[in-house]
Image: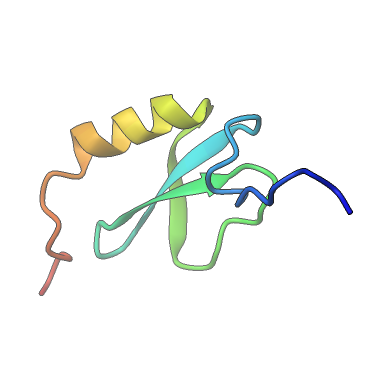
Length: 68
């Protein structure tokens, strides 16, 4: 049995990340090794996780989806 704990790829700071945005202007933190889902586009990165989170915090100021 391993003593290592599972770390979600979205929380693993060893990886680089992207910031994605969809048509409703919602933002997502996304690991670079995963394919960008349909309907989303890269707007920042690749960069360290903390830099991506800082970008999201600075640019996603309206949490209500566009058109809602």
